Picture 1 (cartoon, rainbow, N blue to C red):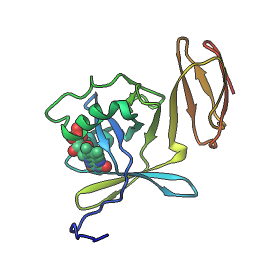
Picture 2 (picture 1 turned 30 degrees about the vertical axis):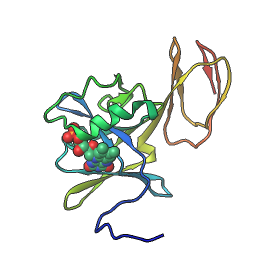
Picture 3 (picture 1 turned 135 degrees about the vertical axis):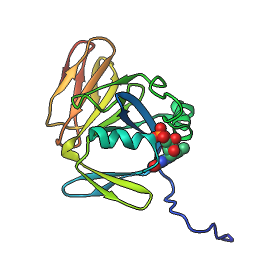
Length: 191
Ligand SMILES: Cc1cc2nc3c(=O)[nH]c(=O)nc-3n(C[C@H](O)[C@H](O)[C@H](O)COP(=O)(O)O)c2cc1C
């Protein structure tokens, strides 16, 4: 196959598309974020790169907290919108159903099946972007699962979990491991 030169760029293909959430001046804002990766094995760190011009970055610097949410295919339109329109000119706080975890200032997206609630510990200032680093111990993983009676195998957790009445359950993990086995019923969750 013939190759063509597409010039200088930093494409790493494919990239996941996530939604980065932060409270800017007390209001939730979400932007599309592809530049997210594991950056250290032990201790486990994750890193994200955000352009200094974006509205969301103000919220990260203001609160030192933010969220990384993983949208599914059905959310492609809304996710794309968050990557095309800035919170400087449009209020993006109502696009998703938002909720907050223990950090209180990191808005998360209810519609996403996986959200990471993150607390910033370090940053690297680059010419156009800031690279934010979050150790896994300062990250909480929250999955929203539609409750089905019986066993649902997920991942191990060394932390707590909480069941909420109704059809959703929040599972919170701190620095624990990777696998949890969950026994779920509409009112009760046991690990
Ligand atoms: C698919 C996709 C991925 C993106 N990934 C990033 C990214 O990783 N880092 C970044 O700084 N901007 C990224 N952007 C651009 C921002 O999401 C976009 O400029 C957004 O409108 C900024 O919103 P804000 O000004 O409300 O923060 C991406 C855009 C799209 C469409």
